[in-house]
Structures are given as structure tokens and as C-alpha cells.
Image 1 (tube, rainbow, N blue to C red):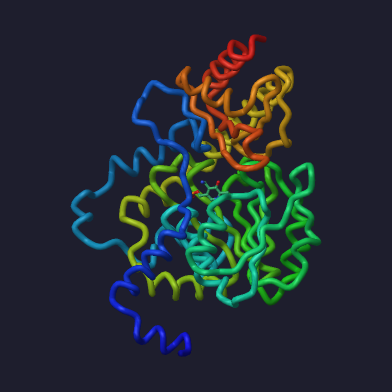
Image 2 (cartoon, rainbow, N blue to C red):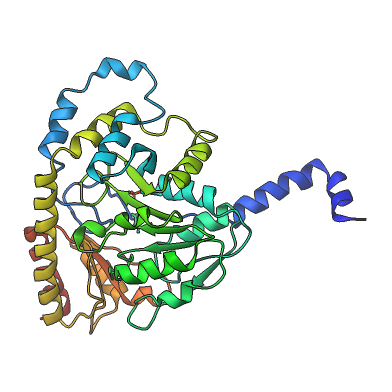
Amino acid sequence: MTEEERGAVRTEEENIMNWEEKVKRMVPYVPGEQPKRKDIIKLNTNECPYPPAPAVKKALQEFDYESLRLYPDPDCSILVEALAKRFHKKPGQIFVGVGSDDVLAMAFMTFFQSGEKILFPEISYSFYDVWAKLYDIPFEMVPLKEDFSICADDYCKPNGGVVIANPNAPTGLAAGLSDIEKIVAANPDSVVIVDEAYVDFGGESAVDLVEKYENLLVVQTYSKSRSLAGLRVGYAIGSEKLIKYMLDVKFSFNSYTLNRLALEVGTASLADEEYFRETCGKIVATRERVKGELKELGFTFPDSSTNFIFAKPTGITAKELFEALKKEGIYVRFFDKPVLREYLRISIGTDEEMDRLLAAIREIVGK
Ligand code: PMP
């Protein structure tokens, strides 16, 4: 009996098992903990410790609550136009979604359908392999160099697409724009996604390269540098060709992605560039100071260009330190996976929060 014939005579119970078995094979992404307690120092999900821009507060106060009666604009025009202006692009080059997770998931669905393996670094954002498995996209996780940097040549071979987080997470390390351009230029027949969730803290953005390369999609988010993780706004910038295809997929999936409040507030946030730059500057200054203090305490880490430090302690395991800090009400991120389990990913909080973290570490390790 052929496989097709066997399928035709499957019992109802077998069919039920089949979908269930398939779903059971999925290993969902586990986001960092969002504790209910308010009295903790939360350095575990790379949120911004400072409030959103004053223009955001004003937009919330002026928001027309009665408008919630109506569906939002499916084209998200006010936000798309504001982002186009901010990045000197055409509205047709902008795609918006419910956080960059939504934008990335949509991009995987749109561009990685060739059946050829997509490539991404072995240590990177752990949602990439989750989406690949969900959509049955074959993939290869490319090892990093010993210092956690990427080797651009590894991505210059036949593939069904490439995803690079730049700066990378959870390492915090940024690749140079010349490496990114090399990868994009070497792959004219597949789409290269550059995930720039952390670019505003010191990375070099590939946004300007979208004019030169039709196969490049740059994805950014409001969740880190704009202090708006709770609003859920992300966006992609690319050629009109790529954005048109993403919109076709979006409108085949869910037309009303961004709600009315997110559209208004997300647009208002862009009006406060000075506040945005000031906030990023404060986080970078704190990060650089904390790097020095962690070094003194014997930690080693790749040089972070992000709002977190991926730090390896000495004299105590990362897991022990993670648990001891948690007892003190200080939450950092621990990934129980090979290599990663030697490190803690510590988000940059306010100066005061970081001082309390450093004092707790000194207490725990007896320094
Ligand atoms: N990309 C990377 C590399 C991230 O670390 C995150 C945050 N978890 C995201 C994308 C998604 O962020 P958001 O959906 O909040 O925009």
C-alpha cells in the first residue's frame, strides 16, 4: 500500500493522533519571567528602565477612547508614514507588526518557503529555530567563532535565506556593517533578514543598504530603546518588493494587527527624538561603567553593544549566582543550554539598580 493509500484509510483516532503528535513535537520559545511582584530589580528581559517619551504620555491622555468601537486601520498608515519619514524611506518600504516577534514570524512565513536550508548563528535569538520548526523550514545553525563573532564567509553558500541578529543576542556582540553587506551581496537569490532589536545601543544599522539590495530586510523594535515593550510595536524596512510580499501574507493571516492605541502612541513616540537619544545615551553610559565593575569582580564577557551584558562569573557557577540573586529580588536571565549556561544575561537598568546588583554580587561571591 502506498503512503497515500494508507492515508486514505487512516482511522479517525489515527488522524487525531497525527495532529497531536505533530504539535507535541513543537518546543515553544520560553520568554523571560514577568514576575507579579513589584519590589524586584528586573534585569531579565532587556526592557528599558526609563519611562517612555513624554509625547507618549500626551498621546495616551488625548486618546479618543470612543474610537475603540471601530476596527483599526488595517494599513496602519499613520505609523507607516511616520516611520517612513523617520528613516527617509517610502511608505511602501515599511511593514509594521505586533512587536518585532510578529514581524519576524511573518517574514519567516513569507520568505523562507524554498525548501532549502536557511542559515542563522548557532548562538542567537532562540525564537529563530522555533519559527523554523513551526513552519517546517529546514535550517542550519552555523557555529560562531570562539570569541562569539560571526564569520561572514559561512553565510556565502547556497541557502534558502539568512537571519542575523546584529548586535547578536544573547552575546551582545555587534558585527561590522561590511560583514553584513558581504552576506547580503553574496545571496541575491535569497532574503537576508537583519534583526536589529538592539542596534540603538551601539550597533551599525543596515537600513541604508536597503536601497542597494532588494533582498535585505531590516527589522527593528519599540521594545528596547523606545521603552515600549508593553505596547508591542515592531517594524521592517526593505525594498518595496519584499514589503509588498509581506503585506500579502499579513492580509492572508490577520488584517488588524496593530490596535488603535498602538498606532497612535507608536506614532507619537517618533516625535520625541531628543528624549530617545538621551535615554539610549544614559543606558550606554551605565553599561560602560558596569563593564568595568564586572571586570574587577572577575567576570568575562563579549564586548556588548546592546542594553545587556552576557557575563561569565568566576568562583561561582552562573546558575548558583542566578539563584542567589533571585533570592535577593534581583532577576537576571539564565539559559540552561550548552555554552550559554556558563553565562548570565544581565539587562542594563538604572545606575541605582546596577549598583544594587553589583553590591549583591559582591556579597554573594564574598568580594
Ligand atoms: N529579536 C531579538 C534579538 C530579541 O532579543 C527580541 C526580544 N526578545 C526580539 C527580536 C523581539 O522583541 P519584540 O517582539 O519585543 O519586538
